[in-house]
Length: 110
Image (cartoon, rainbow, N blue to C red; front, side):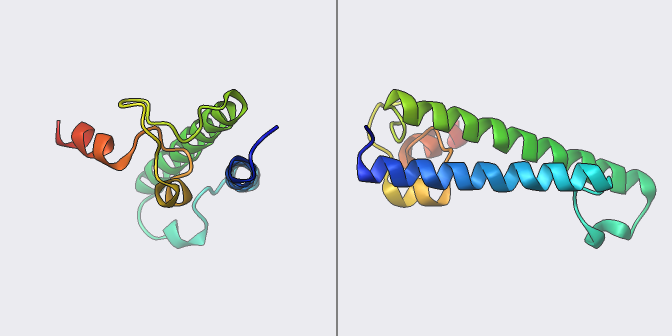
């Protein structure tokens, strides 16, 4: 049984996953993943933007699926680098994050 905090995190992940999935299904069915805003410009650049955004949505969907698996395993919210707990504030903003803020900074800084 999940703790109340874990259940809340799971619900947030499921909600975000559902929103991304709904957006992908809707946009793919109408063939325009980024809406009317990108109708300016060339067809080639529109295609590149659409392809990029579709890729990002699929990546986010996969990351959220992995985070949901971590909830099931009881490892959600644990940094994959240092093993410490990821702050609740960070998880609210980046629910699928794998790293705590300091480990993420170390990865980005090289």
